[in-house]
Image: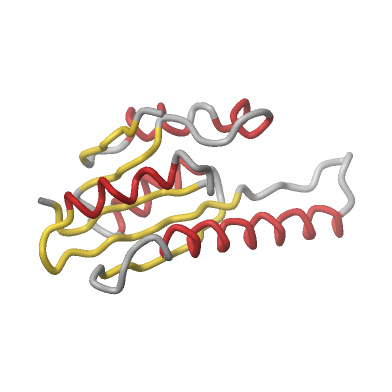
Length: 140
């Protein structure tokens, strides 16, 4: 059993499969941390500053909505904390796991499709390579 479990979410149906695993693996009195990561878009010569700000605000809002939706999957008997970070997902997942002293990360093997999957396809791979915590990979 694990005392502190990190559940990263991108809002996909696959990431919601992490919930049942966390419920079964959490020790009595343990804590679940649900993490959403908003990718920060940087201004380039091709972007206007106000457009970049708008996109970044939308990304944070989406991450907040995603963690809220996952948190609602747990009943009140679970100690659940949510957080949203900005940056590259695998970096933030690994940093939060270390900073919060998580015992386990439960992560879906794939999430979104299309462009997001192309850009973020290496998130799970990077978490597995870089993290020194236990990782439970949920196959889709």
